[in-house]
Amino acid sequence: MDRAAQLEKQLREYQVTAKGELQIKGWYFGLNENVSIKAGMKNSRIGGVYSCPRAEESVRGKVYIIWQDNRRSVASLNSNTTENFKRLIKIWRRFSFADETAAEIYKDDHYPTVRLFDQGVHQLVYENQYQLFDYLDRYNREMKAFQIEHVDASVSASSFQQYIKNAKGLNIENQATSFSTFLYGDGLYGRSYIKRRLIKEEELDYLIRETSTTVNRLKNREPLSGGDMAVILLPVVLKSFINHYLLSNLRGSHVFNGRSAFTAAEFKQQASVLRSDMNLAVNTLIDYNQGSYISTFEGVSGGKKQLIHKGRLLSPMLDLKYAKLMDLEPTPVHGGTGSIQFYTDEMDSFQELLKTIEEGIIVYDVLGMHTQDAASGNFSLTAPNCIRIERGIMKEACKAVITGNFFEVLQNQFSRLGKMPLEDNPCLLMKINVIGEK
Image (cartoon, rainbow, N blue to C red; front, top):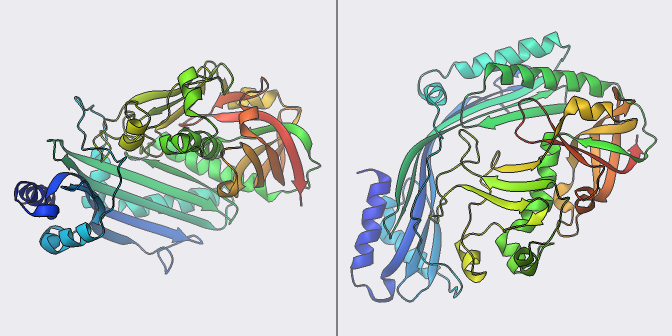
């Protein structure tokens, strides 16, 4: 009997056997049985102390238990859980907690289908492991052609069996995969790719070309005068802003507990918080996106939920507990890369945005996002890698500090979103204060 079936059997037996306060009233668990491989390159050399190839089998998950007296337990699962179940369940009970606001066990009426498994990744893990080194060889060879001397890189792949089960009869069993790769040149700049499928040829070319070109641009640095100017946040940077300033404030727990920039009353009123053409949705049903899923461990179905529409608040992201506390339906929640869609009704291309700039910078990365006050929207961030723009043309590299308020940026008529090829997220053109640094 496999681990998931064994654990389900053990929990159900405990549920129907009279054990006083130790009797279980309800439960759910999520379990992933994972096989992964990884290889890396440091200073253009494959392997070594810091990037040696490795393979790993692991079992990870979470179990949630409601006891007969309504106390709750949450515990991690591993490969030894089922064989030590009788001992562990007593420990779980010992560390149980009371939470009068906690949700009950949940099962949706319908669960969607979404492609989470790629045969190419699965074969890479179990049959074609040498392909990891082919990627690294190619990175080294092609980046050297761009005059990149020191290449750091990693490639990893996983194939896993997922189980989500609960006392109400939820029984999801499916296969999933993950493929990720990271590329960094001359200690200056790097880019990454992560999805549930193998990287396509055009995506691989784009990753190598954009990383190499950017590294070379960043080598020629000049001081920046600064001032109020146009700033383009590239997709990876804008994603960090969205996660920190929008998603954080849309979490049901933050809204309910008063730690959000938005209040529950504003959601009921569908208050206007962004410009009227701006939209934000969580979507966990895009095939092969890393953040896509069928169901949360709690049993809430994956799907698409509009959180902000035409600048107005529609819904926070709600797990079972905060859906209950706010008397609303639970929603899909942000599952990782690719599960958030931020867009305007019309979006120009990156090149079109670039042509409109008389004086400005492109920001490739920022430092210190975790230190910023998400509820206020204020930011003051070091941008160590920027490219100056003059009359629509990319010039030398520079370092800057960018300051402003992200909510004000997203209400300003100057701000525009733009599309970039092979990117899940848009870029953002905005006008803010820039302080040049040496």
